[in-house]
Image (cartoon, rainbow, N blue to C red; front, side, top):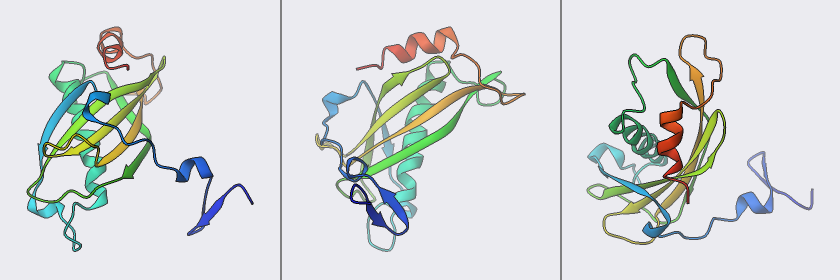
Length: 160
């Protein structure tokens, strides 16, 4: 147990407890501006943590939809989120604008790891960093399938 820290019944390795380096806008390939809403703030006067995952999801799926890579209503292949994470560095609050930077951290055969940086207004230093993994699946059967070639080609442009 000397290699872990016990926090609320969750064991964290020292690596998991260490924040990633503070990234800047230059570390990301594509950006989406997302206005915050009054209801995003919590009782402490900053954006509630659950909303950060919504910002992640919005930035990535908007990128996919805007590039005709995702048809949320009729597409045969969709991405299921199988893993997600967020680290918080600086608070944001309404009426800030969140600038969500995205890049691809890993592009596998059937999955992709999106890495997202959230920046407050015009700040160059990251407010929060996170990731999620999409596994591409057949919509009807929910079984994993290879990432479609057109999707793979565009996602590869988001690799560092």
